[in-house]
Length: 123
Image (cartoon, rainbow, N blue to C red):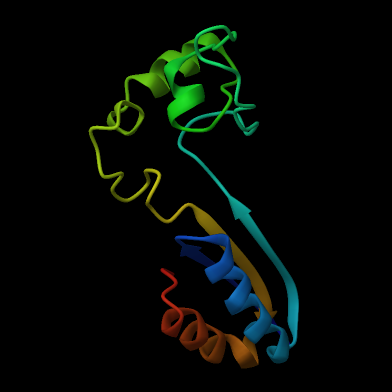
């Protein structure tokens, strides 16, 4: 038996988790759910008071992310998503930033694709 992999994108972790429960019945070999961003860093903003706290960049507050470097913070703060003047679009705060990775037996590959697409996943 051979294996196939699937990368599917979702708008929320809950959507991906719902699909993952359905895929478990298909003898999944390996599966993971991760989030990603177009900017480096993965620590979430701790909620310091903006008037008295130490805020490294606008992006820390508006994008709910901690940047790995000062330069990355400047780059992220220049994005339209940080200003609040954007609806987000694909790849922004309202985009598909949840990745479901599935390794499955090739016999069940087509069935897994249908399950993911029916749940609104982008393959």
